[in-house]
Length: 293
Image (cartoon, rainbow, N blue to C red; front, side):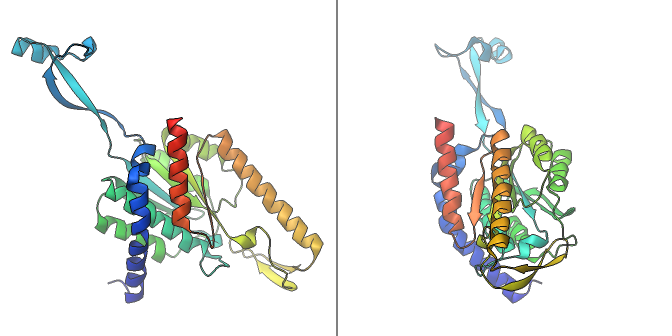
């Protein structure tokens, strides 16, 4: 039995995602993802202009009249959510943690997927794969996915993007639309990301907090790394410390952007305090325009 407060949170999240789901399904979601291929639909009489290669010779011989095979695109997709639940996801300066932001955008994607009759699966990872929910359809299944994202307590504190991506490559043999939701505050993830992108449609979703760009002037503060537990005494009012931090984070963001560009990945950036639904809808519109160009 789920606690009442958790049930209320899930219900509020479902209601809040309806507007976004409607916007995504207004052409964007369906148009930016390709189906799995072409599936046989029916056989019909040959018409002038039809491809000779499409003639079904068995039916033609049986009916004594030329018939062709008709194929349609398989629209059913598998959507995988790879969600980072490491220690850094517990940080938040705008009244909401990065983990809560990740849960919101994952719910918006998941509800959009099932509204389009697609399957949704979940992988929760820290420095290891902690939970896997195989892809299925239906509202009940998506509610379970959202519940796990909100409720799961991570065993590991670190982040290993390769762990989740390696699991995806080992288990998900068929092409899947894969949203990797993380703050990407790690290094050396280009190789596993490249490997995953060869098989799957990989979309990085970067979750950011303003304090990760420039921390406020609070004087002497003891800062703790949520993943390693290491503590450091920092004078946040010091221009030298502030500049060093900002330059380091700018370099990290620039490298992340270069990696995504090298791999030709469309990425979504979510910043705490902003409307995540609008950011997601904006991404889908931009991707639709790019694919149509």
